[in-house]
Length: 237
Image (cartoon, rainbow, N blue to C red; front, top):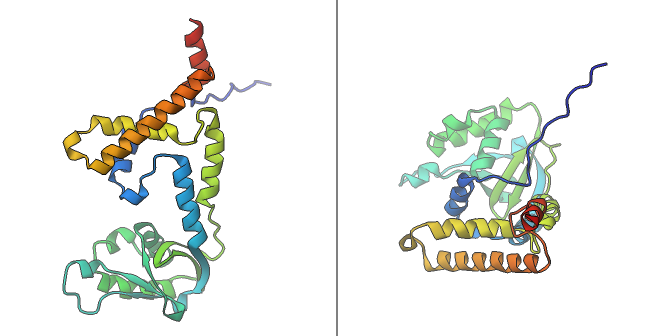
C-alpha cells in the first residue's frame, strides 16, 4: 500500500507582511481602532452584553424610508420597522443579509433610492422567503446581523479570548504585535497628515512594544514578532 506524502503546511511562526491590514486599520473610525487584543476583547464583549437577539415573523418586518426626501442623503436612509414600534438601522453587512433573505440582489439594491428598496425588500422578505421567521441581532438601534431562525453565531469575544491564549507565547499582554506593527506604520506616514491624537497613540503603541521586548529579553525570550526557535538560533550563532 502506497503511503501518501505528509501534508505540507506553511511556517506560520515566521508570519508575513500584510500592508492591506494597516490600510484597513487606519481607515476605520477612531472607536474601531484598537492597539491590543485586550482592548478589542473588552469592546466586543461590552457590545455583546448590550445586544439583543430575537426571532421575528417576516410578516411583522417593514422597511421604512423617508416619504418625501429633500436631500440626497435621505434617498439612502433605510430603517427596519419591528414589533412594538422598534426601529433598527442596518449596517452594510446586515443589509446584504436582508437582501439574501428576501432573494434580492444586494449590489443592485445599493444603487437604488431607499424609497424603492423599502417597498421591494418588504415584499421580498414577506413573500419570496419560504420560512416564516428570521433571527435579528441588534445593538441599540443598529441591526448587526439578519439570519435564518436556526442560525448560530459564534461570539467574537470567545474567538478573541482563544486567540489571545494562543498568542501568549509571544506576548505578555496579548495584542502587542499589532501595536508594534501599527506604530511602525504610523511612523512611516507623513507627520503633517497625522492628528495629535494619532501621533500620541503611535507613541504609546511603540512604547508598549518596546517594554514587552525589554521584559522578554530580560527573561531570555524572543522579542515581539520573532519565533522563539529563530531567536535561540541567533543567540547561539
